[in-house]
Image 1: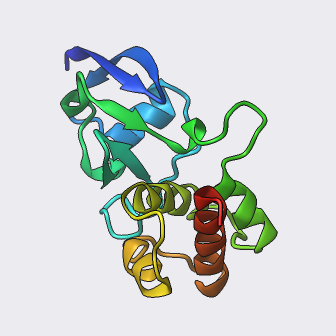
Image 2: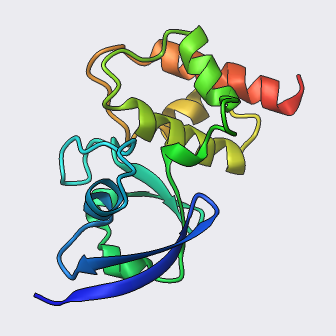
Length: 158
């Protein structure tokens, strides 16, 4: 199989990579670019563990082909923190004990960031709806919802 040369932007940096036609964005991120924060949970788009932002749209990277990302803007979990300074969502997940095994956490954080970019003052119901595509088998969801609501308030300056 021949590989395709792709140029895209990942977490604000222009990135070039080679990938086969059949490689998913998830495979490219993890295997070619060594951005292993994005997790594979199901490989069928059902769990949300591999969620990334693609041109501002939340997607499951296991359902997007790497060759489809040329010229697009991708944001992963690695792009959330600013150096050693955690994003408010990351801090609040820790403070609210909204994580355990960590498989779902990157996808939940990326989904929450996407939600708050569109709706900086969500209700609990809106948070639950916004995160509905992300499954967690360890924590239950209340601490996750509380963390997102707390982060939203902090980010608004409330």
